[in-house]
Length: 174
Image (tube, rainbow, N blue to C red; front, top):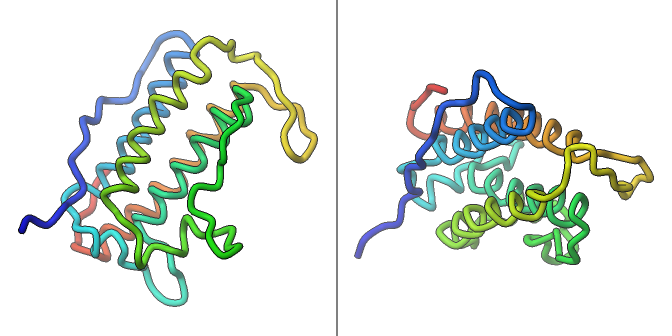
């Protein structure tokens, strides 16, 4: 029996110049692949390893969280698609994406993340960066804001992923 391990992504370098939309998409893609790079080669059990008590943060939790965040910001909010954006909420735990990983299927969760990325990109591909929508808090936001927020969200969580990966097997790097 073969043990599943997180696959290695094809990470392309971030863009150094170009039109704004291309730069935003390039940086977002780079950060998406960075998260997968931090997980590459780890088993499901390793991906479920928490950082340090009392934190329950895990690499798998980060992948699950970013799946929901991609869906929520790009498809549900910016593009206005009617979809559940709470894929991992169970028993009224709004942090189920982070918390409920003990019995999670890591391979299926990674497949869901990888499937969500092109769907998120396709949902907003025809929208200009100036496209606006109203947030759940009543703020008017633009698609440009969503791209910047997503890059920031990944950058923050990729920092967490660095520390988690180092704790698991000592691996460090960008």
